[in-house]
Image 1 (cartoon, helix red, strand yellow):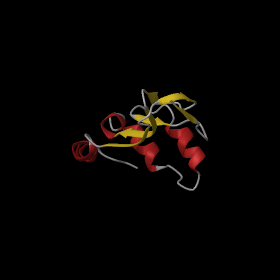
Image 2 (image 1 turned 135 degrees about the horizontal axis):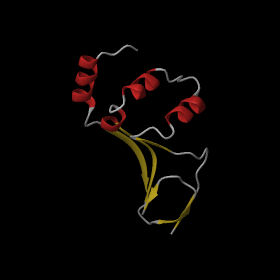
Image 3 (image 1 turned 90 degrees about the vertical axis):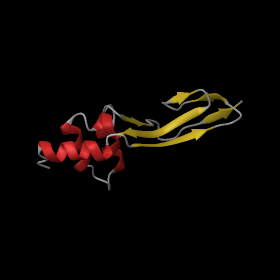
Length: 97
């Protein structure tokens, strides 16, 4: 919780280029979807760019306090955090081309 500047610098060095994501790629194409993050034939369900997240030390504290037993609260806390994309819909639908 009380991360000093040296620890933050080490964390940025170790994880700054790390990127985690889960995407659906529909080869035939997407005709229509209610997904929040769509680009061409790809829907991003979650994406986390650690370099952007680590730019603000408060983000690290917030992530450390995520209640894994309450996914809805965790999603709400991370919504709008720079470097994090989350699917906002509880269920998504995709109509194929």
